[in-house]
Length: 109
Image (tube, rainbow, N blue to C red; front, side, top):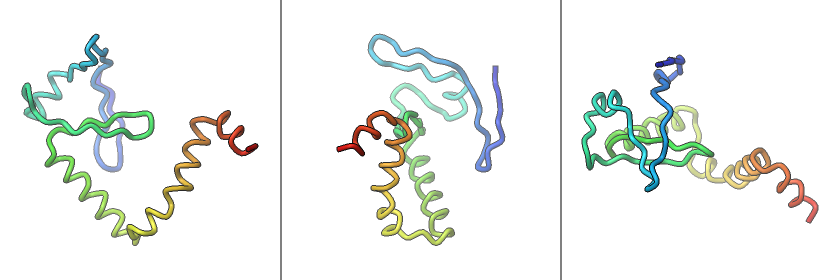
């Protein structure tokens, strides 16, 4: 079952629900491997975003994504220093969102 959801950057496509092997291995759908020309041993960048993992075939595509993010931030007028200055508060907000009980106890200290 393929479900497409329009995303402003491209399409988000549900491919499958997978299972990890006992060794922690995950099989990528053949459709995706063929589309991306992935073979055994092909490099894949794995990024952790919140509770999610983002798999990016090849470093070239990872670098292209980083460049797009950089261009988007530049167009928005966001400087690196400004972005870095927001990290402590952003981390606290994410912590409060994901661990409300711990965040509540932390504020009591």
